[in-house]
Length: 449
Image (cartoon, rainbow, N blue to C red):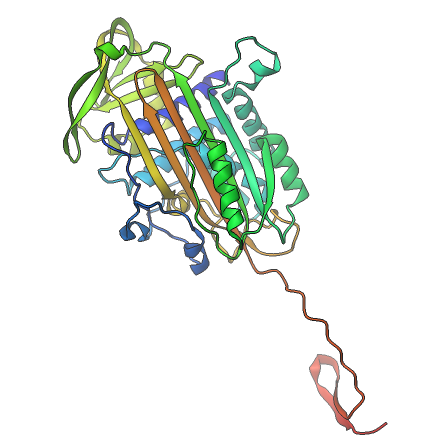
């Protein structure tokens, strides 16, 4: 399992690099939407920042990405496959811009929602997550184990003197004040996903502030705004936050950093290149790419992948768990050097709904109302929107990265209490007497008694 978790961490971190390694922070274009319901298209509120253009809100249908046919040994392996498939879907709209996302920040809340999904849609959700051969309990147990190992909780439990946690993961459910979270879902979310809960009024600005404050707190202030408003039909929102900060096991020397030209997709630009060279560098090369892992002090690594044809988008779009494992297993010790530019990427707030729909996530259909197990009230509930914002910064000392994912769930309006009435028949009134099937048998008027 340690190898699996290490692979998962490496996969999540290496994704940040493959969209490009230079330039300023950018706003990610919004992908297309395939949600059938008009409410769903309006429910993704707050998925723009001040740099977002009107064209970024245009939505188009995305071609479906097939679910994996192979059976994975663990849900964690399936999560890695989900990472590459989600990246492929999101990269369809990246164009020539930089790209960063956190697939695990998307996988984890969806895995939690397996426990609220009805029996008809649950198999499709498990398949989209790469967990088709597992049941809900097995996914819950795997998620709990991943969280313990990824965040190094075991070391803290044993009271190691030099315990340090470079990776922090938080999960939360924000529940509308007029509904009650299903008890079974709440217990599983708390026990297996270390989830917290907060009651909010989605019709008030305080709900937006609560979610944004939670995001800022759990990313050390790197992500301060993820939503701007909620659809009036919102009954709950599930959120995940990931914050990672660690130093290189072998830091780059600032004295060796040199200014040079980065030949990007939009032309040449100045960049500061960090140097690493030696006789025992871990390295992989084949006809498509060169690859080199950079290890962190507390474990894990960032794998740098350089495509030989210069098309990093196609490289990541075509990446699979099998190919990635081949790169890792067949890396050897070699003499050489790596020149890597310092960089910082800000994804902006991305609309995840089109990509998730393309992956086969079945939660966006209001007619099916797949999230029947989320709240106690007998109302239809569906996923109405999903957004993510991710940032990463790489320099001579190490890497800092953060991501927040929020998934909003809408429900049919709850019955509103009626105003008390008074009906006093102290004056003439009429009546209609019906038989079986509604057939009218008698009618009459009472003018006096």
